[in-house]
Length: 151
Length: 48
Image (cartoon, rainbow over the protein chains, first blue to last red):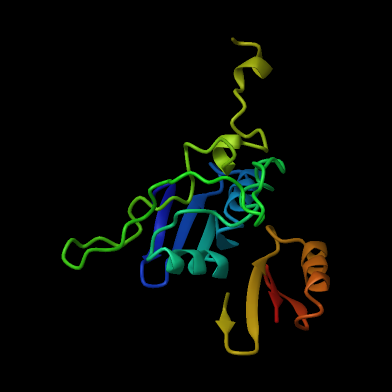
């Protein structure tokens, strides 16, 4: 068995199940990663023998947002990612929405291409410094070298 | 999640990943919307 693996991926329900080797993914990292997605998905953590099993399902808010944009994810909900980025947030406009950038987003599935409709889905926006993994509020991506005194 | 119908849901939460305190706190948060029963079943907490 591989160290990490997509166990199930259901485009019809937009659900995903991953399994991860517990030797490679400490529990704190699992919590931190799950936290990043809380504004977009329901995340259920489980453990089966020596593997973590992670279930993702889109949140109601996320489904409404995709529906409004014809299947494309174009913007996050107000405050989305703020908690994961240590509470930092861009100024909101008069409707309480922060400034947004067009992120492209997922494209609707083509009937004949075999596409699932999840290609290019913007669960994480690498161009957004306030988005979870990039902002790294937990300090997970901190280089270990300074602590070890090797570099 | 092990089951779901219109009015009830059952969730199995692994004891190594979800503390009983956290479950109780979550149940308290949503006490106005639903009632919760928590019991142990092997390695899992079962929340109904």
